[in-house]
Each structure stands twice: as C-alpha cells, then as structure tokens.
View 1 (spheres, one colour):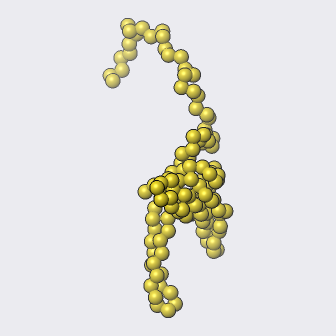
View 2 (view 1 turned 180 degrees about the horizontal axis):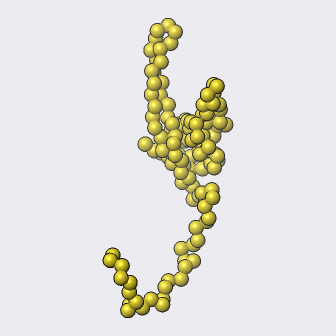
View 3 (view 1 turned 90 degrees about the vertical axis):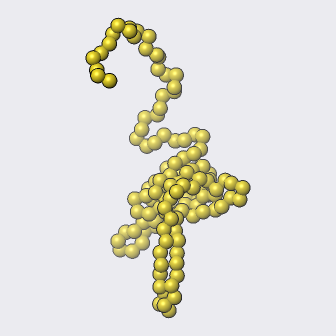
Length: 126
C-alpha cells in the first residue's frame, strides 16, 4: 500500500531494550477532500531512510499495516495496529539527487548521431 502527503513531523530515532531495536516516527498529512494526519513508523535499518527528508516535503510512502494481540495482566485481550513504512519517495518539484549518484544531464545535452551510414551494418543476430 502507499500513502501520499506532506511531511508534518519527523521524530528522532529511538532505541529500545538491550537488543538495540530502533524506531523513528513520521507524521504526514494527506492532501484530499478530508485530509488525514497519519503517523508512520520506520523500524531498524529503515529509520535511516528519513535522514534525507524535511518537514514540508510532499512524499509517497510505501507501507505495511501490522496488527497484534496482547493480553494484559487482568486477562483482557487488546488489539493494536501500526503502520510501518519501508520506502519513501520525494514528490516535491525540486527532488534532491540520490546520494552517491551524479546529477542527470539535461535532455538536450547530447548531439544526435549524424555520421551513420546505412551500408554500415553489423552481423548481430538481433
């Protein structure tokens, strides 16, 4: 599933327990007739995905919905849902270049080949 909206909040990464479980929460506001404010959590190595984003950017987030059952000490069963993000894409006009990738040249930066001769051919079978 995917959600689209404007980033309202990006929280700090939090670490829990002795096993080093990491979680980072982000809130987006959808842009529809009745906007929704939705909290999405990123866990473990996915917390680093949010480092390249800032409040105010329009994004598309790929999500999974998780559910779990819990029985409290009084024996009552409770149910909880969470929304976990696993990919995020910038939808803003001025999208930043991906880290480690060279910027794309403009579409008109290359000259068309004009020294091509029909009689030049290759013997490739396709």
